[in-house]
Image (cartoon, rainbow, N blue to C red; front, side, top):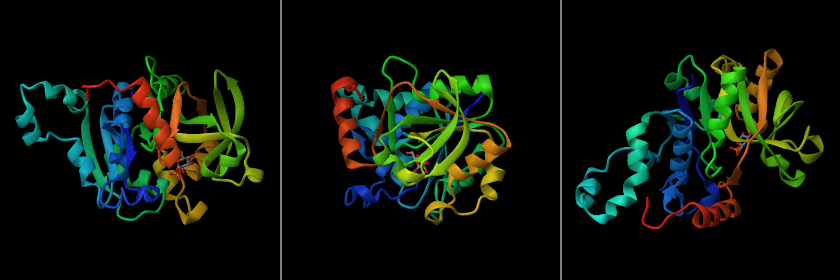
Length: 278
Ligand code: G1P
């Protein structure tokens, strides 16, 4: 059974400066809820209730968000405003939170490896909270992936088709189509140029990883942009055993870009947000 989900939340959020100068990008709100809380809710919904945050300098607001604000609770107890705390209270009552700091920014693979001490020797989820995924009324993306993991017991990456002009922003896979939106990964490349991309199937920020990924990451040399790439480690795992790629059900918004962030905001405001509810 998968119990833990790792959240790499140490990145800088340069594209949202100056908003992210002293505030973590993961705390930017989509309407009234910080991005990272959407990810944590998706994780808890999938049964992954132990949340492992790989944070960094300047990210204390995230740790504070997943703690009680005693003054706030005290101030609004018994008033109608309590309804605004509904979702965060639920998260706090169901989830447990662990944290470690990534001291140097050496890539997503390095962030995952930094989380090893929190995860230990068990399979775990990874959520990149920049990617907001929704599937209203149905299983979230992580819950869909957990079901597949319970069946196949190997690492799984979530994928979606993207236009070729955007492919160089992503890890890209090629594989054997197993039906039902599943592929057995044969090739995986981090941020290729369109002409070098093995397909238009882009990896988005949802993974389930088996714990042998840590040893592989330790032996993975820096790749694209001089960073330790999770994509390269997954390619090794695919060659040695099995990695699956899954075309998920639902919608995904790239909240690491301004247009994606605005699109997500409009979507959540129109379809999910309820006035007076936190
Ligand atoms: C990371 C991964 C990339 C993946 C993407 C999904 O890139 O390295 O393989 O496709 O997340 O959002 P980043 O967007 O952090 O540069």
